[in-house]
Length: 140
Image (cartoon, rainbow, N blue to C red; front, side, top):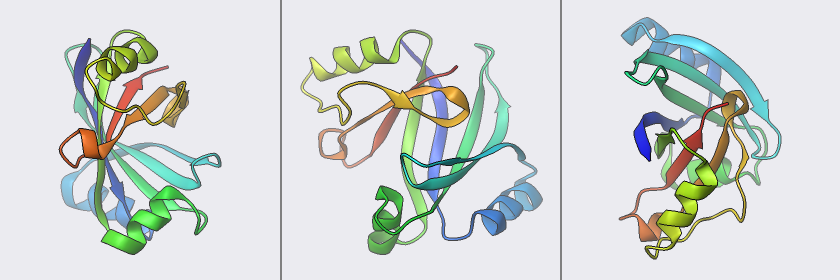
């Protein structure tokens, strides 16, 4: 079952400046920064608040590390801004993806991949989700 909005992904050109903006303007706490080589991004997770299920809500800031990454291509086309929304699950992300796929929504990965902070993730095709790139997240 999908239990929360896990995070909103925001594509940016300068991760450090964008982290500083959200920290200084809104008081969000940057809790994790990593490079995801597979996805070609440097990312930061900024904690917004705790949720009732013991997890938290985050902003995920994404800066491409190479020009052929999905985020770099998205930035070139759209500029900085909201890239995706991610829903968290209290169950297995593969089971969630299979259930959604059975309803006619295309899942972009054959099997979940590693996401931020050791999570398991997959994405749903935006053309099947009213134009919104949607991520499903199972926290580590």
